[in-house]
Image 1 (cartoon, rainbow, N blue to C red):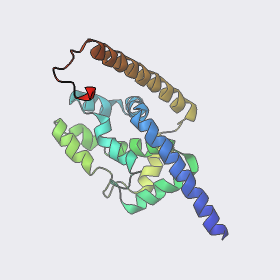
Image 2 (image 1 turned 135 degrees about the vertical axis):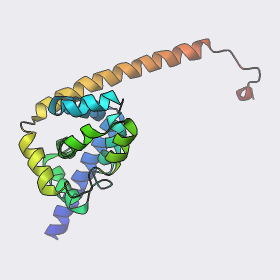
Image 3 (image 1 turned 180 degrees about the horizontal axis):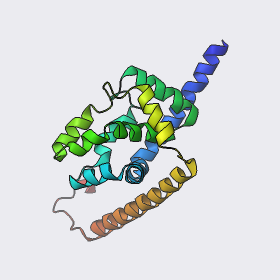
Length: 189
């Protein structure tokens, strides 16, 4: 009974953390934060991606949405979930950055956007992406990884998103105020 209670608590924490994370992702806070962190930690990879106009979110969206189930082997997934339950969503960033770091040299050799996207489709599943290799980078090379810095980056990107939404709402209001009435009004009945 105690084991069931602990598992139920952990599952509810996972669902709660994941629901919050998914909400933040759709607000585009996570995407901008990851791009900032890539630029800080691995500027050569980010510059290479920018050269080919690679949208990082097209590569990592599914990683984050499925909590790495879709792009890594089961050993990596289980390792990730253990740490995700213990440390929270900052492990998402650590693992994503570590996977890019493992393939740093190969990524820089790719010659166009199509090659980058095709390579990244299977980037987390292979001999190099073992739980040991990922953890060594995620919790060694990437340190320090302060939560406060992550939170500040999220706030910056959240303000940007709110500004974009305000602009979009202004454009929508302006459009609705100036659109011509249609010849046939189906709602008048």
